Image (cartoon, rainbow, N blue to C red; front, side, top):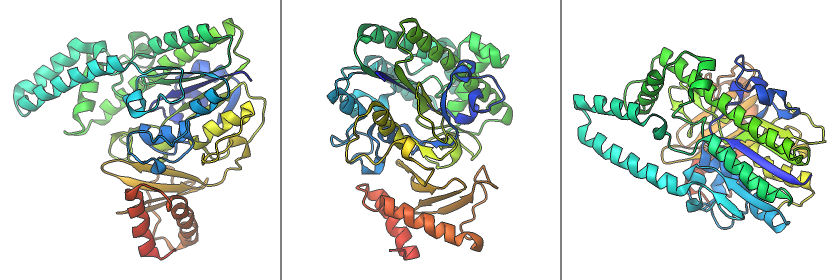
Length: 434
C-alpha cells in the first residue's frame, strides 16, 4: 500500500446511508464499492472538537489540556506519516479543526479556506447585531426571510464539496508519483441543508424557497418554538439529498484515482466525526448527548486485503492506529487506540466536553452506561435501541452497571480535564467504588 486518503463527512449518520440499509438510495456509488464496512462503528464523541482528537491523534479529548486548541503534545497521524516519508495534505473548511486551533501540524499542504471563513464570520456577526436590535419586532421575521432568500447559496458557511474535491484532485495530480496521505473533510451534510436542485429533486419536491424557509426555521428553533413533524420530515429529505451529493463527490474522486491508475494502491477510508439528531430526544443537531443517534457512524476501509469481523464493536480512536498497522508503521506509545484488526469487539468509551454538558460513557454490544455529575443512565440496547428506558435502578442489571462503571471510571480517572474529574469524584463518592 502506497497512499492513504481519509475522507470524513461531518454529521453523517450511518443509518441514512443505503449501503448501511437505509431504504432511500442515498449512496448508490458507495453501495457499489467492495471493502470492509463496519456495521457497529462509533465516534468517541458527539461533537467535532472531541471527535477529531480521537480520529487524528488516537486519544480521548479529556487528555487535551484545552477544550478547543489542540495541545502540542497531541501527536497527529499527519506528523507520524510525514516522519515516515509521506507527503501530507488536508483539505476542509471546518473552523474547529483549522490552523487557528493547531490542526495543521504535520501537513505539507493545509487548506482550511480560513480567509473565506473570516469573511463569512464577519457577515454573520453583522447579521446577528441587526437581529439583536430588531428582535421582538414584527419587521424582524420579514428581514430575516428576505435575507435568507437573497443569500441562497451564498449563505452556506463553508466551502462546497465540489470545490474541495477539485482541490483534492489538483493536489493529487502534483503528488501522484510520491507516497501521500490526504485528509479530506466535507461539511455539506451539516446544517444548514441546502442541496442543489438536481440532488434535492431526487428525494422531494421541496422548492427552493421552501428549502430556505425550513433552514431559517431550523436556525430560529434553537431559541423559539420547535419544528412540526412535517418540517422535520422535509429537513430529513434535504439531509438525504446532501448525502447523495457527497456520494457523487466520492465517485468523482475514486474515478479520478482509477483514471490515473493509483486507486488499487490507495488505502481509502470513509467515515464521519459524529451523527445527527432529528428531534428523537427533543433537539436538532449534535454535540452533547451520548446516544447512538449522535455516535453511530459509517466506517469503510477500501483496498484492504485483510479479513475481520465487520460486525464487532469498534470506535474511531482506532482509525489512525489501523492505518499505521496496514502501512507497517509502529504507532506512537502514547496513542490509546489500536488496530481494528486486533480488536475483538470489547468495550468502547465516549465523552463530551462543552460549556453545558460534561458526560462520559462506556458500551458493550448490548449495554451502555452514561455518567455525568447530575445523572446516571443505563440501557439494554437489544430491547431499547432508542435508549429511552433508563434501567439504572433496575435490580436485574446492577452487576452490568457495576462492571461498566468500574471500567469507565478507571479509563478516565487520570484525565487532565477538571470537569471530567468532577463527574468521577461525584460518582465515586456516591458509589464508593474506589
